[in-house]
Length: 197
Image (tube, rainbow, N blue to C red):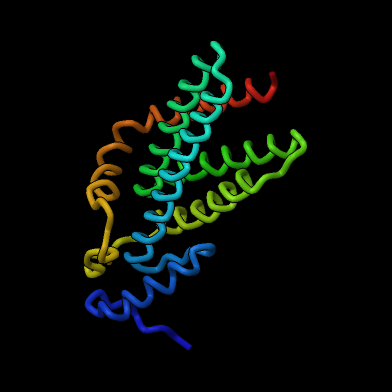
């Protein structure tokens, strides 16, 4: 059975395909401009939420153990985590495979560290699995060649903050890519130091 070729003017078929493929996010398929949009949006929102979760967890750590050491270290870790995950979200929105690989490596390191300390929690396994899924999608999206006849990608009818997901990544990632890598290395160094001590 062969599928019909991609027709950018067949909005009804494109919307149906968009919705169906959103349900199968765990195995990204990228063969048209709408798939590129869907996969990069998934990565953007997953890493943005991960940045917010990290800030929340670190804030709880700070308020539960307000020692002098924690008053200095936890805000630094929170700043590095937010910069790393949010800039990473912008990077995957711009189809950066290297940033997606960095996210997978960080998730793997945190999962292994969790296992080495005698536990294996879903809060380390789920981010790792999502990072692998996103890496596959971003890799496929980065290889997709946009054709002039593809037109504009479909967007959900209730797109939240179009400027936030479309314009900011185009502005932030080229200008702050070095900060992403610096914060990533600082974040990793602080977490490894905390794991050793």
